[in-house]
Image (cartoon, rainbow, N blue to C red; front, side, top):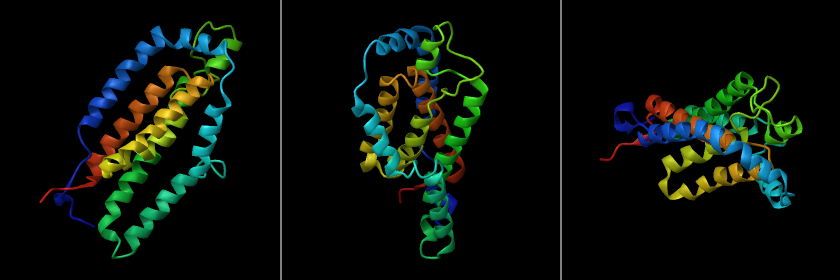
Length: 210
């Protein structure tokens, strides 16, 4: 593994991005979540949204098991640490696995803590409030699922930044079928950015310029 002193952390702009998404989240809860959910409920969503998400899920093995990608990232990390010629790049695998897995773990904890209904559930119950103790919508699990992989990839390999379109599509698709409020997706983005920054401070995944 490249010595820690010769590596750099993930960019500090991640912290600013996390703060921006976090600041937008309560604004969305107060101003746009309810009207957008009611507007979308009046229309039949295109099946392309669900099909697109399904394709993305199969690409990472999610239908086989929700933790398929996590298992694969851990296996890749262990392999890189075990094989001497691969060990130089182990910090890259640790950053990928750490960002993805911590993001998903914290998502589950926040879902249990907030108990937020999905927009379709909220409308079915009369639309009186958006937080209850028997929901699981906040933050968006699909956003953290895909952003937890796409964001560290974009950090490690800047030319791969177009992969960030994947979590953006996932967020739009989940909003379009009334599976998530806008604020759910913003909170998911904030969480992944914060986790990527924190893991980057510890792992220092980027090779320092010579």
